[in-house]
Every structure is written in C-alpha cells, then in structure tokens.
Amino acid sequence: MTRAMSCSLVRMKWWLREAIIDWPAMRWRAVSDDISRGPVPTVDYIKRQIRTEAFFKLNLHSFYMEHTFASESNPLIGPAGGSLTSAEIRELVAYAQRYHVELVPEQQTFGHLHKALRLEKYAELAETPYGDVLSPQRPGTYKLLADLYKELNELFPGQFFHIGEDETFELGEGQSKAEAQAKGVGAVYFEHLNRVRDLLKPYNRRLMFWGDIALHHPELIGNVPKDVIAMNWQYAALDDYSKSINPFKNAGLDQFVCPGAHTWNQIFPNLDAASKNIINFVRDGQKAGAIGTMNTTWDDDGESLFEMAWHPIVLGAAASWQEGAADIQEFDRDFDWAFFRNDGDQFVKAERALGSVDALFGGTTTDEMFWRDPFTTQFQNQGRSLAERIRTMRLTVEDARESLLKNENRARRNASAVAAMKFAAQRFDHLGRRMEVMQRFSDQYWDAYLNLGDRAKARKLRYYTGAIYNNLREMVEELSILKEDYRKQWLAENRPYWLESVLARYDQMVSIWLTKSRAMNEALQKYEATSTLPNPEEFGLGTRPVVAPQSR
Image (cartoon, rainbow, N blue to C red; front, side, top):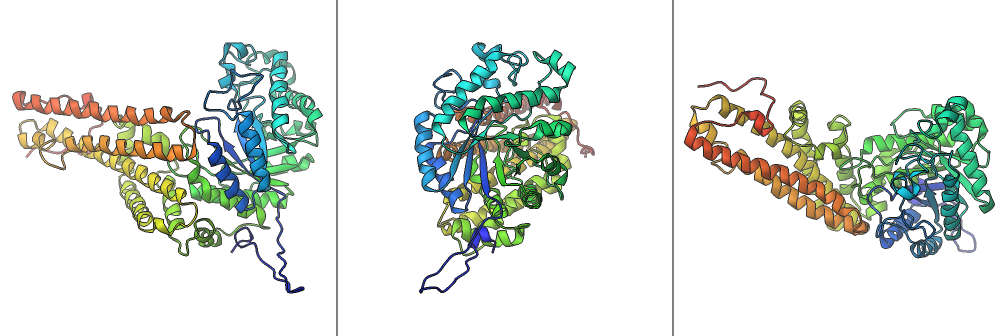
C-alpha cells in the first residue's frame, strides 16, 4: 500500500503511546479545477472537494478563473449565477483552513480572456479585435489586472497567486505586432510577465505562471525573476519528462510539475494516459527538485463532471506524497478501500474498464464523437472501421455497468462517483449502439434501394420489432434518458449556470433522429404506392457498402 493511502504507520512504544511518523516527498500537492468553461461548482460541492482532497493529503486547491470571479470593481465580467462571489470565497477560505488546505486564486492575466474582451468596454484591451489575449500595449490592461488582484488579495490570504499566462497564441499579431517584430514575441511575453510581477509585488505573494510559452523561448527563461514559480504542464503520456523539466531547473526557477486527469473532451477520463502522465511526471519532478505537483482538470467542451476525476486526482496525491515512482498496480489494489471503503475491487475494475475505452477508439476525443451527426460520411466510415472494437467496447462497458449496479451499495464513501461511472457507461454503450444502428441502416437501406422490386426488403426496414425504423426511435428514447441523468449528475456538483448549453446538445441530437425517423416513415408510405425510395444520399447514407447486397 502506498504511503498516501496507508500513511505508512511506524509505531513507537513510548509512555504507552503511539507516534505516527509520516512525511511528504513534495511540499506542495495541489489540484487545479477549471471553473471557467462550463461547470461552476456549488459552494457545497467545493467543500466536498476540499474535504476529500485533504483526506488524501492534498494541501492546495486552485480555482482556474477566466471570467468567473464576481468582481465588484468590474461587475460586467462575471456571469450572473456562474461566478464565485466575495462572500462565497470568504466562506470557502475559512472552511479550507479547517482542513489545512490553501485556496489559490488562478486568475488569468494574459490569454484566455475572451469572455471579458468580447465586451465593448474591454475590447480596446484585446491584442486582436474581441480576441483572447490582453494587449501589453494598452495601459488599461494593467489597470484591469490591478483592480482584479486588489480584490483577490483581500479575499485569499494564502501565499500564492497563480497568474496563468498560458497559450497566448495571438500575441504579436495585433496591437503588439510592431514591438514583437522588433524584439521578438518571447521578449514581449516575458516583459508582460515581469510587469505583472511588479504590479503584484506589494502583496508579498509567490506568483505562479504556466510554463508552456516559456518553453518555446528557453533562451529567455533566465529573465524570469527567481521568486516566480513555473507551473510546468505536460499532458502527453511520456516515459521521460526531463526535456521540459530541465530548462526551468537550469534557470534556477522553482517549479511544480502539472500533469492532467485527462478528463477533458472525454466521456470518461483516459486512465491509461492519465496514470502514466501522473506517475512519470511526478517521479521526474522529484528527481529534479520540483517543489510541488498541481494535478489539473479541464472543461474544454463544457461538460466534464468532476466526480469522474477522482481516480487520477487521488493518484496524483499518492504519487506526490511518496518518494519515487508510484506503483499503479499497488495503487489500484488499495483504491477501493481508500476511496470507497469497499473491501473488494469492484469499483476500480469498473474505473479501469471505462478508462480504457478511449484507447479502443484510437485515442479520439469521445465527447466530440458522441455529438457528431451520425448521418455523415465521417461518422459512418468511422463506425465501419471500428466495427469489431465497438462490440468489444459495448461488452466492456456493459460488464462494468452491471458490476456497478450489483455492487453500488458497497460504496460506504463517495457513492456519487459510482453514479457518475454508471452514467459514463451508459453514454459509451449508446455511442456504440448508435454506430451499429447506422451501419445496419446503411446496409439495409442500400439493399432495399438497389432491389426496389423486392418489397420484402423495403418492408423489412419498418415492419418488425427490431426494424431500423424502430431503432431510430430507440435512439431518441436513449438520448432522452441520458439527458435527464446528465442533468441530475450536473446539479449534484454544479450551479444551474451553463447546464442548458450542454442539454441543448442532447436536444439537437434528438432532433436529428426524430427528423430521420419521420422521413423514413414518409418514404416507406410512399413506397407502398410508387415502389420507389429516395436516394440514400437524401438520408445521409452517401457511403455505399463496399460489397453491395446482390439481387436474388
């Protein structure tokens, strides 16, 4: 059992007492939660995050904020119902202190600020019109940042400010173009970083900044003040991370290694990639003297559920507590008891099964695949190419869901994570069934279209229980069930803000299937009178089967 799980108790008899000797390999062990691109957790759920993270000896929790701080000096920026208010932050800071967890404001100061810069009041501060990046050419940029951080300083009493500054792709393309051409984009970037550092220096905080842009300009990393911490994020599952670690180490900068939970754009986290990323990055960070780990969750497409992220979050806690590389087999053996207080291994097996699906699909983003219009050549070709894997995937997730249904009462803690797993299993199963339905629809419709004289082939599309027409309507039924389950899962974690944006995706997909089922009904009614069927392309079935069914 890993030390983060078991606390590695060393019992020492002394005056009939027991002493617990335990210490972390890394001073700071953090989670960064994206609360800016969809889900904004409720105060109660953030308290659950704090309690659970503290239980696994994490001691920093960072709010990734682009526009979701309810600033009193700039009230237009934060969306109503979707921002952390000053009162909420004070309540959460006090709560976290009880659990020895420091809350870190992670307010962007350079890129990722489109939600503010789309407002006309702030548009002149954008590097490019209504873009994503603040322009360092505008004095108003620093007035805005000064106002925001003055408020944050009064609310967050800890020792860190995270200023973001990642992915400034537009820098040098707009208002700073001339300066970037004269000095180089890297120099402009580091000048802004240093100016923000000077702006916030009176608050006596250690600043953190994302290190991706700095790694593109390694020759300039030495210009970063030594009191600034590089937050070195890398999400690829690599064997060795020294290439990204050494530039900061050689420059004499403190750094955190920042792996990811691999939750973004996925129906369920890619646990194979997340485990390798976390274990190896933290191991290499320890070797290089990194002072901490910040495990990250992101909500790129706005629909991720944090309850699905606990396995990689807890793995990050274990890896950064113990010295050297964590043993994933040992971790998994301990996970059910440590997280669910289950004596068996049913839940971690389900986690691993669901976490392997991404690999079965070839590493694609499964959320994007789920929302892809099935009546397109791209979707249908992908379904045909993955036909054997789809059957394997469906059996895998159905086995996992069955096990969860049979064993859910064994979760004496954190049962909400079991509910999230069941939902993910249903989404995967529906996606697989959708691909199978589309393949059958294409095959059978083409067969009927190429054999119009055989009325049995056309009637087969509708007149029995398992007919394709009925399958189309089943897709609507399944999506409607998934939609309501998702609503329930979302509201267990998050505020209503943004929920309708995701539910609209379910509605759009339902509309696609309803439209096709109505068109199919009309086509088959017309066939009875005319013995003709619409061209398959009219149904979005433009890809003819490789071996077309032959006439009898």
